[in-house]
Image 1 (cartoon, rainbow, N blue to C red):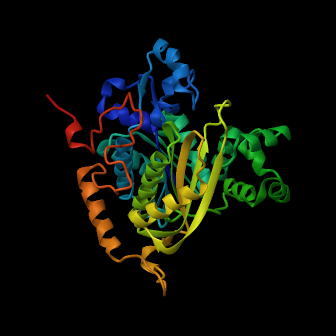
Image 2 (image 1 turned 135 degrees about the horizontal axis):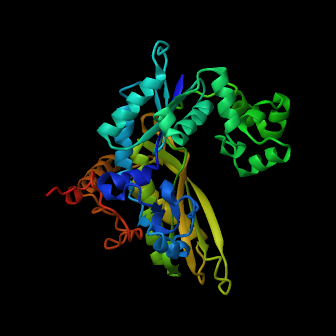
Image 3 (image 1 turned 90 degrees about the horizontal axis):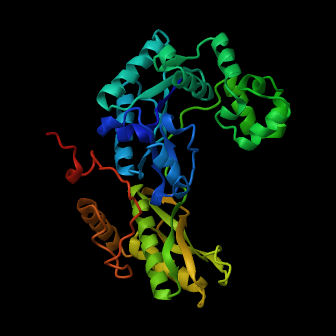
Amino acid sequence: MFALVDCNNFYASCERLFQPWLKDKPIVVLSNNDGCVIARSNEVKKYVPMGAVAHKYKQVFEQNKVNVFSSNFALYGDLSNRVMNNLRVFTPDIEIYSIDEAFLKFEGFEDYNLQEYGVKMRDTVNKNVGIPVSIGFAPTKALCKVANRVAKKFPEKTNGSYVIDTEDKRVKALKWLAIEDVWGIGRKIAAKLRAIGIKNAFEFTQLHDSYVRREFSVVGLRLKHELEGKSRLDLDEVASKKSIATTRSFKNDITDINELRERISTYAVLCAEKLRKQKSDCNLITVFILTNRFKKDKPQYYKSITINLPYASSSSITLSKYAIKALLAIYKKGYHFKKGGVIINGITPQATKQINLFVNENPKHVNLMKSIDTINSNLGVSKVKLGSQDLGRTWKMRQERLSKRYTTNWNELLEVE
C-alpha cells in the first residue's frame, strides 16, 4: 500500500502556527516580489482565485479583511523538513513530492489497521510540528491522491485519514471525483474528455486501453491503470538536477556592458554555489539577454549562446569567466536590456570527474570554493564575492508583508512574555 500525506493549506498553516489569532481568518500568500497569489486558506477561495495579481485584488483584500503575507520560504522550508522527518518514523520508504506533500510506501503492514495508523500519523505531526495534514491510503499512487482528497474533503467522517482498500470504495471514490480533479489531467485534456462525455474519473477508467494510449499517450494509459488499482508508479529516488538556472529581470533597463557583465557574473556564481551543494560539476554554460518586449517604442533583441567548458567545473571563478566570455559574444550596443540569465547543463557528479590530458582547472579552486562557501554560510549572506561582482550590491525581493522567520533566525525567535 501507498499513502499520500498532504499538509492542509500549508503556507497559511505555517503563518497560523506562530500567530494563532489567524485561525479561521482569511489568508493569502504572495509569490516572489509580492506578485500574485500562490496560496489561499479555505476562507478566501470563493472570491480570490489562485494566481490572482496582487495589486488588482488589493481592494478585494481590504473589503474582506484578508491577511496578506509575502512568501516566507525560510519558515515554510524548515517546517516542511520537520513534517517529513516525523513521517519517517512510520516508514523508511518516503518520497518527498513537494514542499507540502509526500508519498509513503507500506510493505509488510498487512496486519495493520491503516485507517487508525493514518490518524496516529496525523496526530503525531500535529503534536510535534503543529501543521494539520490529511492522509490517503491506496494500492497505487494515483488512487492515493483520490483517497487523500476524500480525507481532506470530509474531515469529520474520515478523521483526516481515508483508505481505499476495496473495489466498492475505489469505484465510489472515482465516481465522486470530477475528471478535471484527477492527478495528471490538465485543463486541455479534461476539456477533451468532457467533449466525449467523460465527466468523472470512473468513466475515464472505462475507456478502452488502445483509445487512451492513442489519444493521451503511454502516460495517460499508465494513469488509467493506476486508477484501476494496477500499480505502475513506485517511489522516485531523489536525483540531482539535470540543469540549473539563475535568471532575473533587472530593476531598471541596462545599456552599459559593465553593469550587464556584473549581473551575468553574479548569476554564474549563484549557479556554481548550487552545483557545489549537490556535489556536481557542469560542462556547458548558456547565457541569454533580452530587451523589454512590452516597450514597443524600443528596438527589440534576444540572443543566447552555449559554450562548452574545457573541463568540468563548479568553480565560481571558472563559471564566471566563461559566462562573461559568452555575454561578450552576444552583446549588442544600443539596446535596453531588461532580463538576463545563466543556465548550466551537462551536469556530472564530482566523484566521477573526468581528467583532461592537456588542460585542467587550477586545483586550488576546490579548497578556495570550500572556504568561501563556509564563510558565506556562517555569516548568512554573500560576504565573500569575486572581483567581477559588485561588492555593495545585493539582490533582494520585494517582501513588504513578510512574517518573521521564527525557526531559522536567532533575531526573530518567538518571544514569550
